[in-house]
Amino acid sequence: MHQLRKQLLAIDITTQIDVVHKEMDKQLLEQWKQGSNVFFAAQSNKLSSVYEHAVSSLLACIKPTLTDRPILHEGGIYYGCWLESTGTINNELLSRFLPEVAEETYLGFATFQREDGMLPYKITMDGPNYRQIQLVTPLARCVWHHYQLNETSENFLSTMYDAMVKYDHWLMTYRNTRQTGCIEAFSAFDTGHDLSPRFWHVADTPHQNDATKCNPYSPILPFLAPDLTANVYCQRKYLAKIAEELGKHEEASAWKVKAEQTRQALFTHCYDAVDDFFYDVDRQGQFVRVQSDVLLRVLACEVVDDEMFARMLSKYLLNTRKFFAKYPFPAIALDDPRYDQQISYNSWAGPSNFLAIIRAAHAFEYHRRYVEQLWTIQPIVAAMTRMNKFSQTISPWTGAEGFTEIYSPAILCVLDFVERLSGILPTKDQTIWFTGVLPYDSDHGESITGNLVYRRSVKGHRYEFVNQAGNCEIWQDDKQIVVFPSGLRAVLNEQGELVSLIGMQYGTITGEVVVQERKYNVAISGNEEWMLTGDQWHCIHQSGVVPPTY
Image 1 (tube, helix red, strand yellow):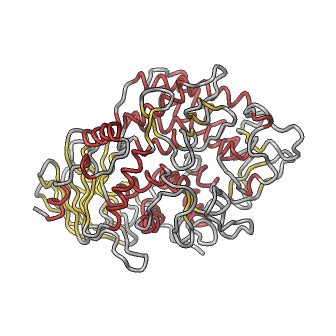
Image 2 (image 1 turned 45 degrees about the vertical axis):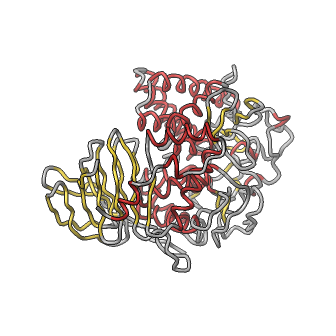
Image 3 (image 1 turned 135 degrees about the horizontal axis):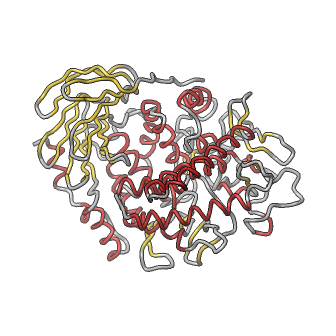
């Protein structure tokens, strides 16, 4: 047996992780063990020790709040669960590891929905709060992915659907005052953009701390907000999917029409063809020309086609003058004179925020830009080896940790990126990804992991993934089932059968693939996907790779 496999099989997570709240933490670790049973071992412990610290820190972010069932908290100085983050993108990642906690967290927002349809923007020990909206990642997308991944009950799906339908009505009633079809921002906190130049000369909270009111004396408010509008487009798109699943076919058709109306409003009002960018539009009809992570938010809402996304990569996301910092993604374009380098306070005026980092993944994967995505993941993983407090922000220049600590987006980023880059990741499409790429030793040449082995249970099977320079091995229930060259991602179905291979590196990966003792020679370029049908390989996706720009 491979030495790393022996090392991994000897690990019991319930004894490996330090616990603080002993009884509850032990129960959570038992859930982890009975469900995903995720862990990894490596030749170098620089990343695996941070991983262990991340798991124990995650437990500190899970606690009962207003009920006796634990939910996820944002962590750090943020005592509670925020809709823009904890209840959406954070929870979407948590769903792969502790699905019971994730589901309870989702349901909390439906439980505390106000009679007029407004969802709380946060839930704390003091109760639900409705002062602002604070929307970023679409809730419906996260709920749908949780339902698909975990095959949860239709009762959960129906409860969340009803709540989200009411909230859509609330948004169109109170946040479409200019009758454009765009969703409007009344304050900086409506989008969670604390201190961003996007909202200079705009109050942090809505008028009189009432989410239904906009300052009537402001010469610039309300903003037609591209990220809020894209959110509602994507929300409606997934409400259509959920309605179909619940047998509400007429409602599903209506949601598709409404979604397209919202997408058209976004492009009609918030898209600037000159800059090829999405901006707020103020009360005077002017573009608020601040290039910020609003672009990432819009792209993660599935509003553009593959061609436009490739263009955005070249112009902005992979442009080192814009958002492709040494440690991406900064909150404001690097070449904006209003960019702020400070990382010591809660700022969306410059530093790379872990929320922006974890939100970006969906945009890249939706457009199947896997190689480009790994270019943005690798430096963050290198920075993770120096993490000891799990901050909200890191420096785009040095990767140094910034504001606050024990922040669940940073903690979940560690768990997610290890799995996404080098581990085993079950997907909403009922496939399992085994990504044969190792963390790259880019910072001072120091080894991050060396070869590693990753463990995960999926649908009643235990998998070990031996990921090493040269080739990778997939083991299912102690039987080796696939061997493939490093630099590729193997996609298996739930039964453990190889479905396809994806090129994850720039250039062409060649080598031998062994499937159930049958051997094949392959040559797969970056972002290509080759499917195995019978004994024949054929290419089902080929987009090329967008290189960085300067």
